[in-house]
Image (cartoon, rainbow, N blue to C red):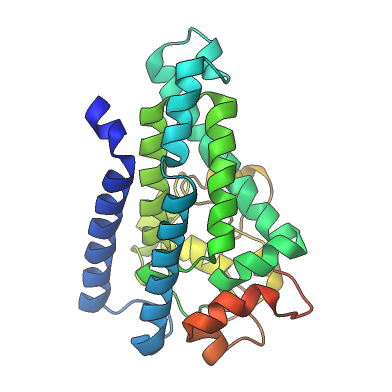
Length: 268
């Protein structure tokens, strides 16, 4: 166990790549519901952002949120380090509270214009597939990392729980963006607890009102509890992306890096 926690970055990347390859293979085998878009520039740009994000995060905070959890544990900091609850209960509560915190982070990214400029890079994708989960501006990734570090310390999350949560978060991001659909009846059952691709797809609508729905990453109950759940989109055919953004702005790596500094006069 100690060896696992000494290499959290390697574990996360290995699982992330395995899930990514699996989902890309499924997408290639079975055509999904999202509109087809040429991959010539999309895939290299999405992958390029992920590479820059990873390198920056490793450079600025090599140990990441798991390292922060280890540090807090060694000093007895945070909520769970000040309690004597059973380990299994703290583990489960940590996963739930972290998921709730990420839900609110996502809502804030849409609520505040300066944050929306960063997050808009993710939404400019004109379609969705597993590589869409790679498409985040480096500044947003660094803010997200700082947020998770603060959560790890404030909650006193066990390092293993932090590692498991990060693996779940990245794996679910790949799954919910993937160009696939669950059978309708099964989807309705699953989304009572978990976010599904069909549920998250609504969040990527070009309509701002629908972009402010279905913020959840793992658990769907937060959207239901806080009034942001949408069961369906309003158009007969869902249009994905950001109004007024297309072509080079939605596919080229350099344009995606510059996107937060373009004034588009609206927010998601």
